[in-house]
Length: 541
Ligand code: ADP
Image (cartoon, rainbow, N blue to C red; front, side, top):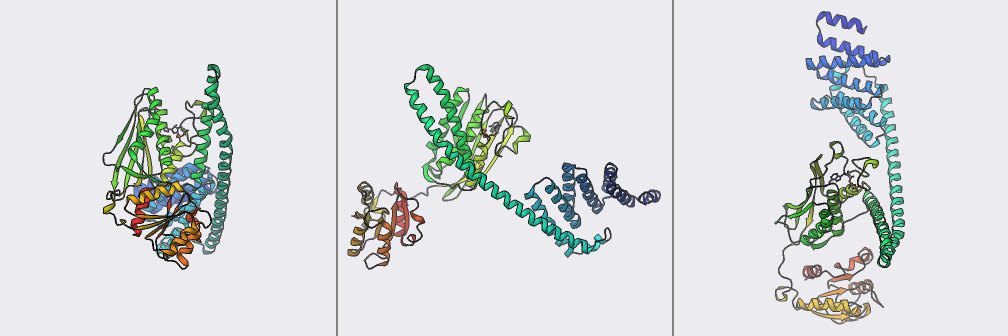
């Protein structure tokens, strides 16, 4: 039947009709298992449709060719073909092809066991299917295919069932990841403890040992330090992966911080005859709120790789201000080297965990393959962006952009006359004499007058006798602690129910005490940060 149709179309010179006839033959060949022949027919149809500019026909054949490749177990070809079909239907908004291709893509991802992608395609398919049914397109489709409504509904139910299965599978996979992370994290902790002992004892023995033993101890030290690094990497990575890390920033001077990090690698670079340079933008602020440990790790990992994979030339570390507001700057940290470079096909995977450009056997340098995955995780924790470009044999350039809060310019704080704190009274409740002395000295410097209460009950007594402008309350104190004393001052008969009270404590969990936080105007942490205390008092003055 298809054959005779082809002959007629050829005879009548109906090229468009001929394409559809060949397409029909391809479909028959495909159902009867003649895959190679069917492929030829589909490819020929594509050529004719392209010449004729027949978009709908082209979309249909891409979809069928994709299905054929699935049958032939050529998933890669199937995916490519179906993507071409999708692009085409996207470009010309041929909804019917779009949703068919999306369904096919969904089946391919399922075969590949890629549940996340499968689900994504399935969602799109269902969305588009609705769109198809809701539009007039359905009428056009009827010219090409007979839609059996009952069958459709059946298929829909099947799809919904599969969708539920995928979601269940995804949940199971997530649970497995969580269990794995907990295990790795626990195991790393367990290994670190005895390792600590090995490293410490090795160092102690090193001092007493003779020269021969020293050499062996050196090797032992090197090996255990390496192991330490690997275990630490795994631990950091699992924490990041599990989303349990958070930033702990403090205001620091960025220049010495960066010089320090660069300095750590100077010796190693020098030994390899490399030039290591640090360039800092003159527009950088002096101080930024930085999580030192994490930023050191981010820079350290990239610089260490740059030095490791470069045998001659240089490693440049550059820090540039990209943009800024009154209280924060977006900075770019860029590390470029003139090393071996990264192969093109690997560049997309370089931030994946356990990634190496070379197989284990041919690798010159050790490493877990977690370094850059950790850096990427840390950059994401900073809500930043990371990137890399590289040329084989010429070198690589890694960069990340992150926003950092900076110190807002303020008036000189050590000049008491100009502050609104001048002459104000403060009750300092603190049982530790040294701490009390430091705080009170500071308050005097700001022109304030302070009185000391050595525990919570003394603080309550004083609060009953006199109005203070501020109360600084230590939390862990004998007799009555800072929580109860503050609760009393806020809610019982005394002269300071409205006085601002700031907790001053070394206990980081204090601010989580839900029953008490409401009584405080704020929490200040020890060791005391002068700026923060000054700001807190000023804001409440
Ligand atoms: P590892 O901790 O094992 O070094 P990384 O995640 O830091 O793992 O790096 C992964 C791989 O990326 C390295 O093994 C190396 O092949 C490649 N790589 C990273 N940085 C560079 C660089 N600057 N030059 C060349 N290759 C690099």
